[in-house]
Length: 162
Image 1 (cartoon, rainbow, N blue to C red):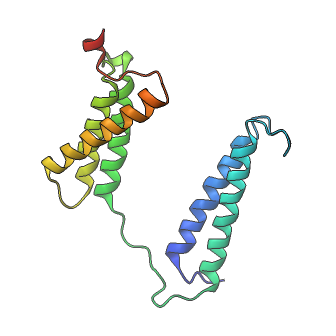
Image 2 (image 1 turned 90 degrees about the vertical axis):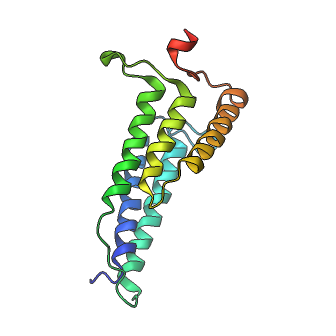
Image 3 (image 1 turned 30 degrees about the vertical axis):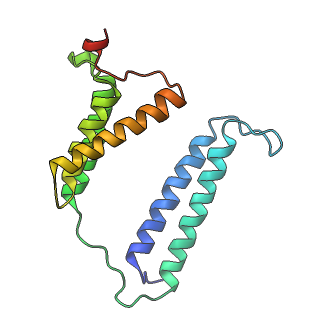
């Protein structure tokens, strides 16, 4: 069968692969029953549903004809690099790297650093706009995770708080 929409086919393939991986990973937990669900029940059902949606999208991509075939374009290397780098930076800033002597910088610094790095992925970069966004994100995350959900993780750098 010929693929009539490459974008839809490969996005469906990604959905099916991720859904299958979650479903397979959920088998390591107790599934329970519908009446008494275990910790693996929700990830299993979500993974199966995601895989089914992916298979449907793949099927549709091979049946429904699109005007130009929806070809997949070139890789966007710049956004890919900066978004992955921002996620890695968030982990390092939030928890530090004790083996290398890098202290934990906390949630606020991690959000600011991540926002500034990830915003480099776009076509335009305005420091003032990024600073405002980072401030709003920091306040929102602090309120949501620390104040409301009462999660225990470092908010400020360890050399300041001790």
